[in-house]
Length: 515
Image 1 (cartoon, rainbow, N blue to C red):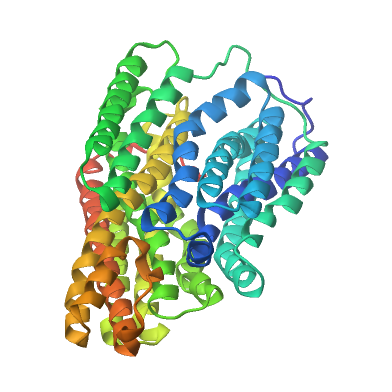
Image 2: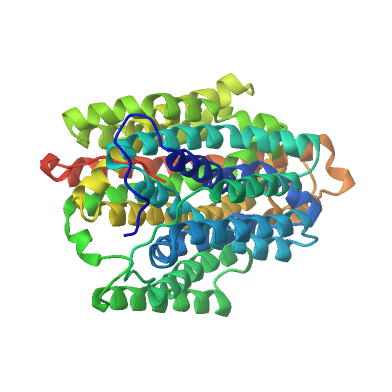
Protein backbone atom coordinates (compact mmCIF):
# COMPACT_ATOMS: atom_id res chain seq x y z
CA UNK A 1 0.00 0.00 0.00
CA UNK A 2 1.35 3.43 -0.87
CA UNK A 3 0.76 6.06 1.77
CA UNK A 4 1.68 9.68 2.37
CA UNK A 5 4.95 10.30 4.13
CA UNK A 6 4.92 9.51 7.83
CA UNK A 7 4.36 12.38 10.20
CA UNK A 8 5.23 12.70 13.88
CA UNK A 9 2.50 11.14 15.97
CA UNK A 10 0.37 13.62 17.94
CA UNK A 11 -3.25 14.12 18.84
CA UNK A 12 -3.66 16.84 16.20
CA UNK A 13 -4.82 15.87 12.73
CA UNK A 14 -2.41 16.62 9.90
CA UNK A 15 -3.60 18.76 6.96
CA UNK A 16 -3.91 15.63 4.79
CA UNK A 17 -6.02 13.94 7.46
CA UNK A 18 -8.31 16.96 7.79
CA UNK A 19 -8.87 17.22 4.03
CA UNK A 20 -9.49 13.48 3.83
CA UNK A 21 -12.00 13.58 6.67
CA UNK A 22 -13.90 16.49 5.12
CA UNK A 23 -14.03 14.90 1.66
CA UNK A 24 -15.18 11.52 2.94
CA UNK A 25 -17.86 12.96 5.23
CA UNK A 26 -19.46 15.15 2.55
CA UNK A 27 -19.16 12.54 -0.20
CA UNK A 28 -20.49 9.57 1.72
CA UNK A 29 -23.29 11.72 3.13
CA UNK A 30 -24.66 12.13 -0.41
CA UNK A 31 -25.05 8.37 -0.72
CA UNK A 32 -26.50 8.01 2.78
CA UNK A 33 -28.98 10.82 2.16
CA UNK A 34 -30.23 9.32 -1.09
CA UNK A 35 -30.80 6.03 0.69
CA UNK A 36 -33.45 7.67 2.91
CA UNK A 37 -34.40 11.15 1.73
CA UNK A 38 -36.00 9.89 -1.50
CA UNK A 39 -38.61 7.99 0.51
CA UNK A 40 -40.38 11.18 1.61
CA UNK A 41 -40.56 12.34 -2.04
CA UNK A 42 -42.16 9.17 -3.38
CA UNK A 43 -45.77 10.27 -2.94
CA UNK A 44 -45.13 13.51 -4.86
CA UNK A 45 -43.21 11.89 -7.70
CA UNK A 46 -45.76 9.05 -7.89
CA UNK A 47 -48.47 11.62 -8.52
CA UNK A 48 -46.44 13.61 -11.10
CA UNK A 49 -44.99 10.62 -13.00
CA UNK A 50 -48.10 8.42 -12.73
CA UNK A 51 -46.22 5.60 -10.98
CA UNK A 52 -47.66 2.29 -9.78
CA UNK A 53 -46.53 0.43 -6.66
CA UNK A 54 -43.96 -1.45 -8.74
CA UNK A 55 -42.66 1.84 -10.13
CA UNK A 56 -42.30 3.31 -6.65
CA UNK A 57 -40.43 0.21 -5.51
CA UNK A 58 -38.02 0.41 -8.44
CA UNK A 59 -37.21 4.05 -7.75
CA UNK A 60 -35.76 2.69 -4.49
CA UNK A 61 -34.64 -0.76 -5.67
CA UNK A 62 -32.72 0.36 -8.77
CA UNK A 63 -30.41 2.34 -6.50
CA UNK A 64 -30.23 -0.33 -3.79
CA UNK A 65 -29.55 -3.17 -6.26
CA UNK A 66 -26.45 -1.66 -7.85
CA UNK A 67 -25.16 -0.38 -4.51
CA UNK A 68 -25.58 -3.78 -2.84
CA UNK A 69 -24.08 -5.76 -5.71
CA UNK A 70 -21.12 -3.48 -6.45
CA UNK A 71 -20.04 -2.23 -3.00
CA UNK A 72 -17.28 -4.85 -2.65
CA UNK A 73 -16.24 -4.33 -6.28
CA UNK A 74 -16.04 -0.58 -5.68
CA UNK A 75 -13.69 -1.17 -2.77
CA UNK A 76 -11.51 -3.47 -4.88
CA UNK A 77 -11.33 -0.90 -7.69
CA UNK A 78 -10.12 1.71 -5.22
CA UNK A 79 -7.45 -0.64 -3.91
CA UNK A 80 -6.27 -1.43 -7.45
CA UNK A 81 -6.44 1.92 -9.24
CA UNK A 82 -6.26 4.51 -6.46
CA UNK A 83 -8.80 5.23 -3.75
CA UNK A 84 -8.99 8.97 -4.36
CA UNK A 85 -9.37 8.45 -8.13
CA UNK A 86 -12.20 5.90 -7.80
CA UNK A 87 -13.86 7.94 -5.06
CA UNK A 88 -13.83 11.03 -7.28
CA UNK A 89 -15.18 9.02 -10.22
CA UNK A 90 -18.01 7.81 -8.00
CA UNK A 91 -18.84 11.38 -6.98
CA UNK A 92 -18.95 12.52 -10.63
CA UNK A 93 -21.18 9.60 -11.68
CA UNK A 94 -23.44 10.15 -8.69
CA UNK A 95 -23.78 13.89 -9.42
CA UNK A 96 -24.52 13.45 -13.13
CA UNK A 97 -27.10 10.75 -12.35
CA UNK A 98 -28.68 13.05 -9.75
CA UNK A 99 -29.03 15.75 -12.39
CA UNK A 100 -30.81 13.31 -14.72
CA UNK A 101 -33.04 12.17 -11.83
CA UNK A 102 -34.07 15.76 -11.17
CA UNK A 103 -34.80 16.42 -14.83
CA UNK A 104 -36.55 13.08 -15.50
CA UNK A 105 -39.76 13.45 -17.50
CA UNK A 106 -40.80 9.81 -17.14
CA UNK A 107 -40.63 7.06 -14.59
CA UNK A 108 -38.40 4.87 -16.77
CA UNK A 109 -35.79 7.64 -17.08
CA UNK A 110 -35.87 8.21 -13.33
CA UNK A 111 -35.39 4.51 -12.57
CA UNK A 112 -32.49 4.23 -15.04
CA UNK A 113 -30.82 7.29 -13.52
CA UNK A 114 -31.31 5.87 -10.01
CA UNK A 115 -29.50 2.71 -11.13
CA UNK A 116 -26.57 4.84 -12.31
CA UNK A 117 -26.66 6.65 -8.96
CA UNK A 118 -26.25 3.25 -7.31
CA UNK A 119 -23.13 2.60 -9.39
CA UNK A 120 -21.68 5.94 -8.31
CA UNK A 121 -22.51 5.24 -4.67
CA UNK A 122 -20.85 1.81 -4.90
CA UNK A 123 -17.63 3.53 -5.95
CA UNK A 124 -17.64 6.19 -3.24
CA UNK A 125 -19.19 4.50 -0.18
CA UNK A 126 -16.47 1.86 0.44
CA UNK A 127 -13.80 4.44 -0.38
CA UNK A 128 -14.73 6.63 2.58
CA UNK A 129 -13.34 4.46 5.36
CA UNK A 130 -10.67 3.02 3.04
CA UNK A 131 -9.18 6.50 2.50
CA UNK A 132 -9.31 7.26 6.20
CA UNK A 133 -7.60 3.95 6.95
CA UNK A 134 -4.87 4.62 4.39
CA UNK A 135 -4.20 8.31 5.08
CA UNK A 136 -4.57 8.53 8.87
CA UNK A 137 -1.73 7.67 11.21
CA UNK A 138 -2.56 4.40 13.06
CA UNK A 139 -2.61 6.29 16.35
CA UNK A 140 -5.32 8.65 15.08
CA UNK A 141 -7.23 6.24 12.85
CA UNK A 142 -9.83 5.37 15.47
CA UNK A 143 -10.44 9.05 16.11
CA UNK A 144 -10.82 9.66 12.38
CA UNK A 145 -13.38 6.87 12.02
CA UNK A 146 -15.27 8.19 15.03
CA UNK A 147 -15.40 11.74 13.63
CA UNK A 148 -16.50 10.40 10.24
CA UNK A 149 -19.22 8.27 11.85
CA UNK A 150 -20.53 11.13 14.01
CA UNK A 151 -20.61 13.66 11.16
CA UNK A 152 -22.20 11.18 8.75
CA UNK A 153 -24.83 10.29 11.37
CA UNK A 154 -25.80 13.94 11.72
CA UNK A 155 -26.14 14.31 7.94
CA UNK A 156 -28.24 11.16 7.73
CA UNK A 157 -30.32 12.32 10.70
CA UNK A 158 -31.23 15.58 8.98
CA UNK A 159 -31.77 14.03 5.54
CA UNK A 160 -35.45 13.01 5.64
CA UNK A 161 -36.45 16.30 7.28
CA UNK A 162 -34.50 18.34 4.73
CA UNK A 163 -36.01 16.25 1.94
CA UNK A 164 -39.50 16.89 3.25
CA UNK A 165 -38.86 20.63 3.37
CA UNK A 166 -37.60 20.59 -0.23
CA UNK A 167 -40.66 18.64 -1.41
CA UNK A 168 -43.13 20.91 0.42
CA UNK A 169 -41.39 24.16 -0.52
CA UNK A 170 -40.52 23.34 -4.12
CA UNK A 171 -40.60 19.95 -5.80
CA UNK A 172 -39.44 16.36 -5.35
CA UNK A 173 -36.83 17.16 -8.00
CA UNK A 174 -34.86 19.28 -5.53
CA UNK A 175 -34.17 16.14 -3.51
CA UNK A 176 -31.83 15.20 -6.36
CA UNK A 177 -30.59 18.66 -7.35
CA UNK A 178 -29.22 19.23 -3.82
CA UNK A 179 -26.51 16.67 -4.60
CA UNK A 180 -24.91 18.89 -7.24
CA UNK A 181 -23.37 21.55 -4.95
CA UNK A 182 -22.34 18.82 -2.51
CA UNK A 183 -20.54 16.96 -5.31
CA UNK A 184 -18.69 20.11 -6.41
CA UNK A 185 -17.59 20.64 -2.82
CA UNK A 186 -16.26 17.08 -2.58
CA UNK A 187 -14.28 17.38 -5.82
CA UNK A 188 -12.72 20.61 -4.56
CA UNK A 189 -11.75 18.95 -1.26
CA UNK A 190 -10.28 15.90 -3.02
CA UNK A 191 -7.55 18.04 -4.58
CA UNK A 192 -5.81 18.07 -1.20
CA UNK A 193 -6.27 14.35 -0.44
CA UNK A 194 -3.22 12.13 -1.09
CA UNK A 195 -3.61 9.14 -3.41
CA UNK A 196 -3.26 5.61 -1.99
CA UNK A 197 -3.62 2.14 -3.47
CA UNK A 198 -2.73 -1.52 -2.93
CA UNK A 199 -0.47 -3.06 -5.59
CA UNK A 200 -1.79 -6.35 -6.94
CA UNK A 201 -5.43 -5.78 -5.96
CA UNK A 202 -8.07 -6.50 -8.60
CA UNK A 203 -11.88 -6.46 -8.76
CA UNK A 204 -13.97 -9.64 -9.00
CA UNK A 205 -16.04 -8.92 -12.14
CA UNK A 206 -17.63 -12.38 -12.59
CA UNK A 207 -18.75 -12.28 -8.96
CA UNK A 208 -20.14 -8.76 -9.33
CA UNK A 209 -22.10 -9.59 -12.49
CA UNK A 210 -23.53 -12.87 -11.16
CA UNK A 211 -24.63 -11.44 -7.79
CA UNK A 212 -26.27 -8.50 -9.62
CA UNK A 213 -28.24 -10.96 -11.78
CA UNK A 214 -29.17 -13.01 -8.72
CA UNK A 215 -30.40 -10.08 -6.64
CA UNK A 216 -31.97 -8.23 -9.57
CA UNK A 217 -33.82 -11.26 -10.89
CA UNK A 218 -35.28 -12.05 -7.49
CA UNK A 219 -36.29 -8.44 -6.80
CA UNK A 220 -37.88 -8.11 -10.26
CA UNK A 221 -39.84 -11.34 -9.82
CA UNK A 222 -41.27 -10.25 -6.45
CA UNK A 223 -42.10 -6.77 -7.72
CA UNK A 224 -43.71 -7.99 -10.97
CA UNK A 225 -45.84 -10.54 -9.15
CA UNK A 226 -47.77 -7.74 -7.42
CA UNK A 227 -49.07 -6.51 -10.80
CA UNK A 228 -49.04 -9.50 -13.16
CA UNK A 229 -48.92 -12.61 -10.99
CA UNK A 230 -46.66 -15.58 -11.66
CA UNK A 231 -46.60 -15.31 -15.42
CA UNK A 232 -43.89 -16.51 -17.84
CA UNK A 233 -41.71 -13.42 -17.41
CA UNK A 234 -41.90 -13.67 -13.62
CA UNK A 235 -40.77 -17.30 -13.68
CA UNK A 236 -38.03 -16.44 -16.20
CA UNK A 237 -36.79 -13.74 -13.82
CA UNK A 238 -36.71 -16.27 -10.99
CA UNK A 239 -34.74 -18.61 -13.22
CA UNK A 240 -32.17 -15.90 -13.99
CA UNK A 241 -31.91 -15.25 -10.26
CA UNK A 242 -31.29 -18.91 -9.42
CA UNK A 243 -28.63 -19.25 -12.14
CA UNK A 244 -26.97 -16.03 -10.95
CA UNK A 245 -26.80 -17.16 -7.33
CA UNK A 246 -25.56 -20.66 -8.21
CA UNK A 247 -22.81 -19.32 -10.47
CA UNK A 248 -21.84 -16.75 -7.83
CA UNK A 249 -21.40 -19.42 -5.14
CA UNK A 250 -19.57 -21.74 -7.54
CA UNK A 251 -17.18 -19.04 -8.73
CA UNK A 252 -16.52 -17.54 -5.29
CA UNK A 253 -15.60 -20.99 -3.98
CA UNK A 254 -12.97 -21.43 -6.71
CA UNK A 255 -11.47 -18.04 -7.51
CA UNK A 256 -8.18 -17.02 -5.94
CA UNK A 257 -9.41 -13.61 -4.74
CA UNK A 258 -13.17 -13.79 -4.13
CA UNK A 259 -15.26 -10.75 -3.30
CA UNK A 260 -17.05 -12.95 -0.74
CA UNK A 261 -14.77 -15.46 1.03
CA UNK A 262 -17.30 -18.25 1.64
CA UNK A 263 -15.11 -19.80 4.32
CA UNK A 264 -16.07 -16.94 6.62
CA UNK A 265 -19.57 -18.38 6.89
CA UNK A 266 -18.16 -21.46 8.60
CA UNK A 267 -17.58 -19.21 11.59
CA UNK A 268 -20.81 -19.25 13.65
CA UNK A 269 -20.58 -15.66 14.83
CA UNK A 270 -19.98 -14.32 11.31
CA UNK A 271 -22.82 -16.41 9.89
CA UNK A 272 -25.17 -15.50 12.74
CA UNK A 273 -24.49 -11.79 12.72
CA UNK A 274 -25.01 -11.63 8.97
CA UNK A 275 -28.28 -13.55 9.32
CA UNK A 276 -29.30 -11.05 12.00
CA UNK A 277 -28.30 -8.20 9.69
CA UNK A 278 -30.32 -9.65 6.81
CA UNK A 279 -33.46 -10.00 8.91
CA UNK A 280 -33.27 -6.70 10.80
CA UNK A 281 -32.09 -4.46 7.97
CA UNK A 282 -34.58 -6.03 5.60
CA UNK A 283 -37.37 -5.05 7.96
CA UNK A 284 -35.91 -1.57 8.39
CA UNK A 285 -35.66 -1.06 4.62
CA UNK A 286 -39.29 -2.04 4.01
CA UNK A 287 -40.72 0.07 6.84
CA UNK A 288 -38.47 2.98 5.88
CA UNK A 289 -40.00 2.96 2.39
CA UNK A 290 -43.65 2.32 3.17
CA UNK A 291 -44.01 4.40 6.36
CA UNK A 292 -43.72 7.79 4.55
CA UNK A 293 -46.25 6.60 1.94
CA UNK A 294 -48.60 5.66 4.79
CA UNK A 295 -48.07 8.93 6.67
CA UNK A 296 -48.55 11.15 3.61
CA UNK A 297 -51.12 9.15 1.66
CA UNK A 298 -53.25 7.72 4.48
CA UNK A 299 -52.77 10.02 7.48
CA UNK A 300 -52.40 13.29 5.58
CA UNK A 301 -48.94 14.28 6.81
CA UNK A 302 -46.90 16.84 4.89
CA UNK A 303 -43.61 15.61 3.43
CA UNK A 304 -41.73 17.57 6.11
CA UNK A 305 -43.73 15.99 8.92
CA UNK A 306 -43.28 12.53 7.41
CA UNK A 307 -39.53 13.09 7.20
CA UNK A 308 -39.43 14.12 10.85
CA UNK A 309 -41.59 11.24 12.08
CA UNK A 310 -38.65 8.94 12.82
CA UNK A 311 -36.43 11.58 14.41
CA UNK A 312 -36.68 9.80 17.79
CA UNK A 313 -35.09 6.74 16.15
CA UNK A 314 -32.25 8.80 14.68
CA UNK A 315 -31.61 10.75 17.88
CA UNK A 316 -31.47 7.62 20.02
CA UNK A 317 -29.22 5.90 17.50
CA UNK A 318 -26.81 8.84 17.38
CA UNK A 319 -26.86 9.44 21.13
CA UNK A 320 -26.70 5.91 22.56
CA UNK A 321 -24.84 3.76 20.00
CA UNK A 322 -21.40 4.63 21.35
CA UNK A 323 -22.42 3.90 24.93
CA UNK A 324 -23.96 0.54 24.09
CA UNK A 325 -20.94 -0.29 21.94
CA UNK A 326 -18.65 0.27 24.96
CA UNK A 327 -20.90 -1.89 27.15
CA UNK A 328 -20.82 -4.64 24.52
CA UNK A 329 -17.02 -4.53 24.52
CA UNK A 330 -17.12 -5.04 28.29
CA UNK A 331 -19.88 -7.64 28.63
CA UNK A 332 -19.94 -9.25 25.17
CA UNK A 333 -22.41 -8.59 22.33
CA UNK A 334 -24.85 -11.43 22.91
CA UNK A 335 -27.28 -9.62 25.29
CA UNK A 336 -27.37 -6.58 23.03
CA UNK A 337 -27.80 -8.58 19.82
CA UNK A 338 -30.66 -10.49 21.40
CA UNK A 339 -32.57 -7.67 23.11
CA UNK A 340 -31.90 -5.01 20.46
CA UNK A 341 -33.46 -6.74 17.43
CA UNK A 342 -36.39 -7.98 19.54
CA UNK A 343 -37.09 -4.42 20.74
CA UNK A 344 -36.75 -3.16 17.17
CA UNK A 345 -39.28 -5.80 16.11
CA UNK A 346 -41.69 -4.56 18.78
CA UNK A 347 -41.15 -1.02 17.48
CA UNK A 348 -42.02 -2.07 13.92
CA UNK A 349 -45.21 -3.70 15.17
CA UNK A 350 -46.16 -0.62 17.19
CA UNK A 351 -45.83 1.56 14.09
CA UNK A 352 -48.39 -0.66 12.39
CA UNK A 353 -50.75 -0.88 15.35
CA UNK A 354 -50.46 2.72 16.56
CA UNK A 355 -53.36 4.05 14.47
CA UNK A 356 -55.81 2.09 16.60
CA UNK A 357 -54.78 4.14 19.66
CA UNK A 358 -55.53 7.53 18.13
CA UNK A 359 -54.81 9.72 15.15
CA UNK A 360 -52.20 12.03 16.65
CA UNK A 361 -48.48 11.57 16.07
CA UNK A 362 -47.86 11.02 19.79
CA UNK A 363 -50.32 8.13 19.91
CA UNK A 364 -49.89 6.57 16.47
CA UNK A 365 -46.19 6.96 15.63
CA UNK A 366 -44.08 8.17 18.55
CA UNK A 367 -44.25 5.00 20.72
CA UNK A 368 -43.13 2.81 17.82
CA UNK A 369 -40.39 5.22 16.77
CA UNK A 370 -39.12 5.39 20.36
CA UNK A 371 -38.99 1.62 20.89
CA UNK A 372 -37.49 1.08 17.42
CA UNK A 373 -34.82 3.71 18.11
CA UNK A 374 -33.87 2.14 21.42
CA UNK A 375 -33.68 -1.31 19.82
CA UNK A 376 -31.49 -0.12 16.95
CA UNK A 377 -29.23 1.78 19.35
CA UNK A 378 -28.74 -1.44 21.30
CA UNK A 379 -27.87 -3.29 18.09
CA UNK A 380 -25.81 -1.22 15.64
CA UNK A 381 -22.42 -0.78 17.36
CA UNK A 382 -22.31 -4.27 18.98
CA UNK A 383 -23.28 -5.80 15.62
CA UNK A 384 -20.43 -4.06 13.78
CA UNK A 385 -18.04 -5.08 16.53
CA UNK A 386 -19.16 -8.70 16.43
CA UNK A 387 -18.98 -8.95 12.63
CA UNK A 388 -15.47 -7.57 12.38
CA UNK A 389 -14.21 -9.44 15.41
CA UNK A 390 -15.55 -12.76 14.16
CA UNK A 391 -13.34 -12.57 11.07
CA UNK A 392 -10.14 -11.63 12.88
CA UNK A 393 -8.07 -8.50 12.35
CA UNK A 394 -6.67 -9.51 8.97
CA UNK A 395 -10.11 -9.94 7.41
CA UNK A 396 -11.99 -7.31 9.42
CA UNK A 397 -12.28 -4.96 6.43
CA UNK A 398 -13.63 -7.74 4.21
CA UNK A 399 -16.07 -8.77 6.94
CA UNK A 400 -17.36 -5.21 7.30
CA UNK A 401 -17.79 -4.88 3.52
CA UNK A 402 -19.69 -8.17 3.30
CA UNK A 403 -21.94 -7.16 6.16
CA UNK A 404 -22.71 -3.83 4.52
CA UNK A 405 -23.56 -5.59 1.26
CA UNK A 406 -25.82 -8.00 3.16
CA UNK A 407 -27.63 -5.08 4.82
CA UNK A 408 -28.27 -3.38 1.50
CA UNK A 409 -29.31 -6.60 -0.26
CA UNK A 410 -31.70 -7.31 2.61
CA UNK A 411 -33.42 -3.95 2.15
CA UNK A 412 -33.69 -4.55 -1.59
CA UNK A 413 -35.32 -7.98 -1.25
CA UNK A 414 -37.55 -7.01 1.67
CA UNK A 415 -38.94 -4.00 -0.20
CA UNK A 416 -39.86 -6.31 -3.08
CA UNK A 417 -41.23 -9.19 -0.98
CA UNK A 418 -43.13 -7.07 1.55
CA UNK A 419 -44.32 -4.86 -1.30
CA UNK A 420 -46.09 -7.94 -2.64
CA UNK A 421 -47.70 -8.38 0.79
CA UNK A 422 -48.64 -4.69 0.84
CA UNK A 423 -50.43 -4.72 -2.52
CA UNK A 424 -52.27 -8.00 -1.89
CA UNK A 425 -53.34 -6.84 1.58
CA UNK A 426 -54.44 -3.50 0.15
CA UNK A 427 -56.69 -5.17 -2.45
CA UNK A 428 -58.36 -7.27 0.23
CA UNK A 429 -58.74 -4.33 2.62
CA UNK A 430 -60.25 -2.13 -0.11
CA UNK A 431 -63.08 -4.62 -0.59
CA UNK A 432 -63.77 -4.80 3.15
CA UNK A 433 -63.50 -1.06 3.86
CA UNK A 434 -65.49 0.10 0.82
CA UNK A 435 -68.22 -2.44 1.57
CA UNK A 436 -68.42 -1.08 5.11
CA UNK A 437 -68.59 2.48 3.71
CA UNK A 438 -71.63 1.50 1.64
CA UNK A 439 -70.23 2.45 -1.78
CA UNK A 440 -71.48 0.74 -4.91
CA UNK A 441 -69.98 -2.36 -6.51
CA UNK A 442 -68.74 -0.40 -9.55
CA UNK A 443 -66.75 2.00 -7.37
CA UNK A 444 -65.36 -0.87 -5.32
CA UNK A 445 -64.23 -2.75 -8.43
CA UNK A 446 -62.61 0.40 -9.83
CA UNK A 447 -60.63 0.89 -6.62
CA UNK A 448 -59.48 -2.73 -6.47
CA UNK A 449 -58.27 -2.56 -10.10
CA UNK A 450 -56.13 0.44 -9.15
CA UNK A 451 -54.70 -1.07 -5.96
CA UNK A 452 -51.20 -1.13 -7.43
CA UNK A 453 -51.32 2.69 -7.43
CA UNK A 454 -51.43 2.60 -3.62
CA UNK A 455 -52.99 5.81 -2.23
CA UNK A 456 -52.80 7.58 -5.61
CA UNK A 457 -55.85 5.83 -7.04
CA UNK A 458 -58.72 7.81 -8.58
CA UNK A 459 -62.26 7.14 -7.35
CA UNK A 460 -65.40 7.95 -9.35
CA UNK A 461 -67.30 11.04 -8.21
CA UNK A 462 -69.95 8.96 -6.52
CA UNK A 463 -67.54 7.63 -3.89
CA UNK A 464 -67.62 10.86 -1.88
CA UNK A 465 -65.88 11.41 1.43
CA UNK A 466 -66.80 7.96 2.85
CA UNK A 467 -65.09 6.32 -0.12
CA UNK A 468 -61.92 8.38 0.26
CA UNK A 469 -61.75 7.66 3.99
CA UNK A 470 -62.23 3.97 3.29
CA UNK A 471 -59.30 4.00 0.85
CA UNK A 472 -57.05 5.65 3.43
CA UNK A 473 -58.14 3.16 6.10
CA UNK A 474 -57.47 0.26 3.70
CA UNK A 475 -53.92 1.43 3.10
CA UNK A 476 -53.47 1.69 6.86
CA UNK A 477 -54.59 -1.95 7.16
CA UNK A 478 -52.09 -2.99 4.49
CA UNK A 479 -49.24 -1.08 6.13
CA UNK A 480 -50.11 -2.72 9.45
CA UNK A 481 -49.51 -6.14 7.87
CA UNK A 482 -46.13 -5.01 6.52
CA UNK A 483 -45.17 -3.56 9.91
CA UNK A 484 -46.19 -6.76 11.73
CA UNK A 485 -44.23 -8.88 9.25
CA UNK A 486 -41.25 -6.61 9.82
CA UNK A 487 -41.72 -7.07 13.55
CA UNK A 488 -41.48 -10.83 13.09
CA UNK A 489 -38.24 -10.38 11.13
CA UNK A 490 -36.81 -8.26 13.93
CA UNK A 491 -37.66 -10.84 16.58
CA UNK A 492 -36.14 -13.61 14.44
CA UNK A 493 -33.00 -11.48 14.24
CA UNK A 494 -32.86 -11.44 18.02
CA UNK A 495 -33.26 -15.24 18.06
CA UNK A 496 -30.30 -15.52 15.67
CA UNK A 497 -28.25 -13.26 17.93
CA UNK A 498 -29.08 -15.38 20.97
CA UNK A 499 -28.18 -18.75 19.47
CA UNK A 500 -25.27 -17.93 17.20
CA UNK A 501 -23.41 -15.87 19.78
CA UNK A 502 -23.95 -18.32 22.63
CA UNK A 503 -20.66 -18.98 24.40
CA UNK A 504 -18.62 -17.31 21.64
CA UNK A 505 -17.49 -14.08 23.22
CA UNK A 506 -13.89 -15.03 22.50
CA UNK A 507 -14.52 -14.71 18.75
CA UNK A 508 -15.35 -11.02 19.03
CA UNK A 509 -11.97 -9.33 19.04
CA UNK A 510 -12.30 -5.82 17.63
CA UNK A 511 -14.80 -3.06 16.98
CA UNK A 512 -15.77 -1.02 13.93
CA UNK A 513 -18.47 1.13 12.35
CA UNK A 514 -21.03 0.12 9.75
CA UNK A 515 -20.78 2.22 6.62
